[in-house]
Length: 91
Image (cartoon, rainbow, N blue to C red; front, top):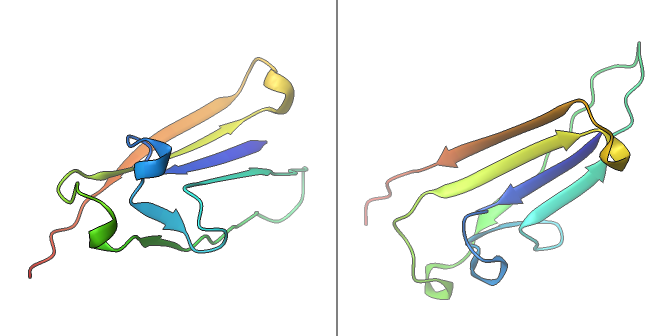
């Protein structure tokens, strides 16, 4: 499967507020090799919120998306989802 994670995907790439710790990018792509009888595959990715001084929009939620699809654009299975992560932080 081809996996793609997009952090803060509703914002333009240069305005994204959340980045991955490794590589400081707002997206992650990887080809996942799956075979019958193999153990489950797990990836841990650490992300961070950029410094407040680096962006203006502090109120809208951060939208994350994960898509999984068969390689080569083959018709068939496509999994896609969005998650909104929102927290209120008192100051």
